[in-house]
Image (cartoon, rainbow, N blue to C red; front, side, top):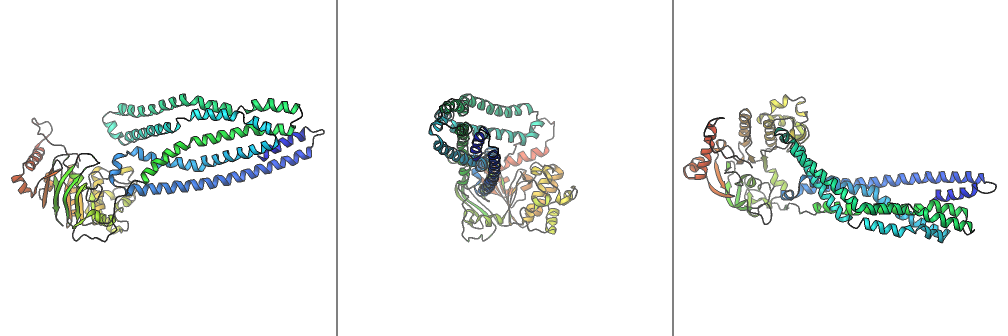
Length: 558
């Protein structure tokens, strides 16, 4: 405010008879000093606001990341990647922007008008009221424009989530899209979601733009009132030239500060909506983990009357499943597609929680074991191998960060991965790209096996790694798996029955229930479903492309 008072005083000094140039120079120096002080204070305020904002951003992202690592897998079944990405990135960024920018602006926009109004009332109450004439009309215009803003922000956030989901699907499926010539159709889907956002924004501005426009016009029109009233009062001798100049300069700033305050307030609904999504994640219940000292007495796995459904009210995927996987033995799960084999295996590390019954490790319910202790007993090799965007060495040491180079080498040799790693440009220090994009499917699988070997856990959960491997990779992977399974309790989901014919125990699942269990020979002798699966498997081995009478082969998708 000081520069405005200085300008008013300079005007009277210049128009004085004769002009008071000494006063003008002194006032100019005072204005320069005030501007310098303003720069220092604004810079300090910006620095403090941004430091606080980035600390909040850091803390929120760390808390969200920890929470997502602590919730059960069922949490993600109701939330798409696009929605979570928007919360972790966009909503958190909105809070950072509010703390760093909108909140300081709001404080300034509130404090400056109050101080200005008090000063103007003290100088001349008539001109002060004239400065505020347009304020009530401007507030009404803004209220009209903002009457549906909260609902509109919610709609806009839903549209953004859909756009994020469409974009992520387009990028992740780009290989499939190009392979099957789906570019036009899938791009059309993505384009449609973007067009929906554009149409929504155009409709929003048509509905609310008039109110925003009226508010801006009214806020900027205070001079329409101040000039004639101030001129009339000046000509009558009841208002000094200095006061007139001060009101003409400072009066419009009073309402312009109101505009900043209104726009800062307009962001509150959006911030609240984003914060509600953040809090919904933070409030999600963690996977329950006990603090007791229960310890498994052996390495066997048992299922006791286990039932499971993916969500409340949904149909049961598993129904009263009971069997044991003895310690140090290989137990195979077989059955048609959708029988629940992979779901059953994923109950052991508590990726999902049994709805009823109990899954036991070493005679102890897995829910009674501290999660770290449970996972230390388990290694997992699944079909869908996930590799991080890092080096080969970093991906291998995920399960055992303190592993020596010699131990890494030994695990890779046993997994039949050492040779192809040595052929990479930087060997163990080669960057793999996103999801291991630079490796073939067989190479990824062998790295996954090496990772499991390096962990050296006594229980192995195996969703058969050779289901979609070519013959050369299948042979190498089978050799690696033989090394991995030796001396361990193995629970394997079988797709190619020839790989589990020698298993110690085979459990046949059908429709989420145990149909039968026994050895390969026992099941071939008495189990009709196993006989059918084996017959389909042997016919598939004899089938070749182009032969008439192609057998009805079941496609396994888990």
